Length: 129
Figure 1 (cartoon, rainbow, N blue to C red):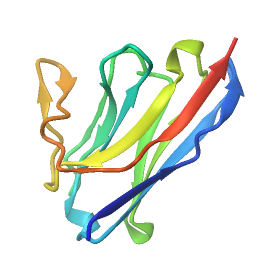
Figure 2: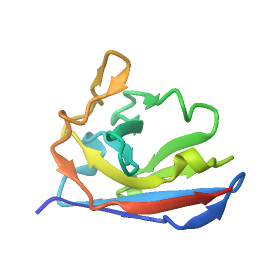
Figure 3: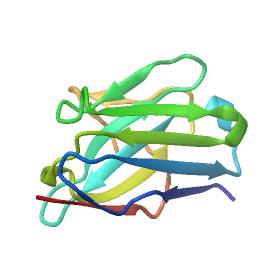
């Protein structure tokens, strides 16, 4: 089966950093884009970042540009999200997901969760002020 396992969440003070990891199994990882979404209580799920496969590029939400960096290590079947300069507004459960194809889908400037076929269970990030 296809599995995505997110890890690396925790409690950090504002201005700190965390690195999330999404370990993917059950697919030919080199051909699959992987993205990150987050959801805070009372808010809609929003796209955070996405990285394509086969040199298809990256995408970042406006609120995290310049602070977050997405990368992938194909040898480890893992996608990382380095989060720097964290703000309390970044507090959310972070989910990794894959559309099962090489490219991320962006609709009207936002990463589409409808295009994601496979989802991990998420990891909680809490940023204190």
